[in-house]
Image (cartoon, rainbow, N blue to C red; front, top):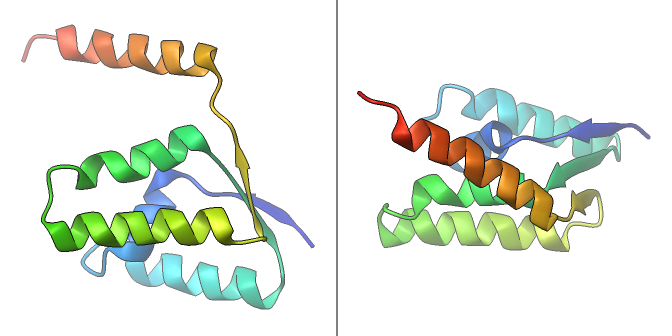
Length: 102
């Protein structure tokens, strides 16, 4: 059994049929399941997965919520919790980008 890190791009591609990596993500998902491999992700990644859907249609928001529910309940997925320091660092990075002039 191997551990693989899943970032937000992977999770988003899984639930977005129009995503250029959707077929590759679903292929990897099936492969990981068949080999009983584990997936490691973080709460920060899950936040990044939800964020793009916040301004979307109800159907797309529901798909994101359903995905996160499945991830949380999947015994093959290990979710590393977010620390306050990680939030502060991520927010500081976002603040820097937000302050950039267009």
